[in-house]
Image (tube, rainbow, N blue to C red; front, side):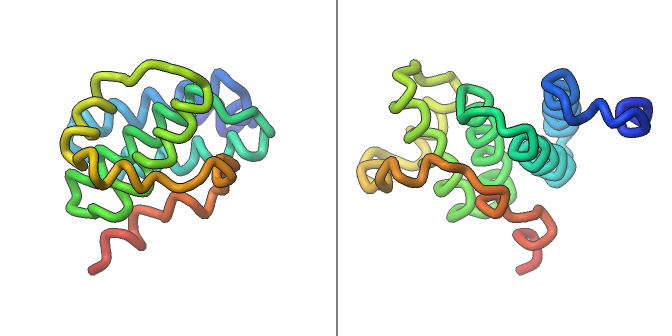
Length: 136
């Protein structure tokens, strides 16, 4: 990771995938805040690269939703999941196993209030920093 930071190669697709893998590893180790921090970095870097919204955004948002839910941040979890759902539906993709689990957690009544598609442009500010969400 240090070499990629030093050579500014985190701002590439390979760098984004590395950060996503690192975040996923942190989550498996039980470090939800660490995972959220890495995924926030991915979203910021991705925005700077001007990569179109796609499946990677769905994965990020579903993972953010799951981690936020585990941290008791229900609104953040639901908002992230609803954004992932809009992208998934717009792209015509199937639901992932994690997405299906979250969908059951939130329930169909809540998901029927999914906001309009005009919010598909994902801003970095859409994902709060873990520290701001963890302070109660």
